[in-house]
Figure: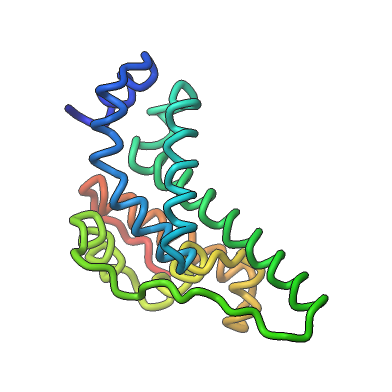
Length: 184
């Protein structure tokens, strides 16, 4: 079944379609969450929240705006970054109140068995310029805002916005099999 067929099944509340959708994407989304959160336990919690949201909000999917994969990854990234920022805020408040150090559980850096999606993403990112790749990694993997990226790289905000936009346009063109001149 295609992703579109699966999401239509989920919209109709077909349990089998949801199960197949979960089987297809759970590992990939889990790996993304681990990469952002650096904690497998939290990544499992967020993974569950993501698929509950998919079940609940599948009818909000709009094929004219994005592919099923793009929609899913947007939800996953947002949920993982929300959890990361929430954890960061709690940790910061705790550190202000206590003079002792907080012991954090280290996440696994090396996940066994790269998925096909991860390989695809790496190949696509390798086709971007170094500057484009850096801004996307800071945005998607570290959760930085465009303002924060500009400050970290000591570059004008407009330059950062242009790089992100051209990088995303190039990735979209690569995904759809088109050629592009979106270099910045």
